[in-house]
Amino acid sequence: MTTDHSQKPGHGHGQADHGHGGTGLYIKVFLALCVLTSMSFFTVSDFWPFHDTPAVGWVFMMAVSCTKALLVMTFFMHLLWEANWKYVLTIPASMMSVFLVIALVPDVGQRIRSYSEERLIYAADESAEVHGEAHEQHDATDDEAKKHDEHKHDESKKSKAHGETEGS
Image 1: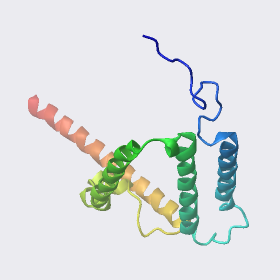
Image 2: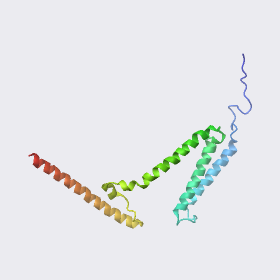
Image 3: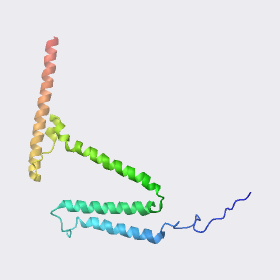
Image 4: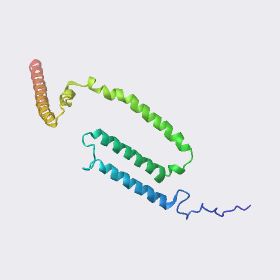
């Protein structure tokens, strides 16, 4: 019983592209990634027209970042040439991540309602919109926190002293 060990054309181990687009495609993807990176840096340059609205820059940079990630996954991780089983893995994982975000949004939004007194002292004040005001309020909350800590320390000393006099 003999088996044919001859290799079929295009399936040898010495082939450079393995049917995955070749070197030219990877160079094009690399150049596209370079262009997208320069677009990200454009948002912090003097030529960016939306300096007054940073949310526009954030959305733009997120779109560019997602595009770059998609290019890397598609070409450098060879997902373009994978079988359809990739959808069996990615669609349920994507759905679970969306549900996780939806489930956590109410917790994040309602977290301030259950702050302890000490955490409220150190929490940022929502009304401080100007940076200078925030520093003044931060200094004031530091003073309040120190007073609070000193008060707790004095109370613990009093309770220890009181406990010692009762035991004698």
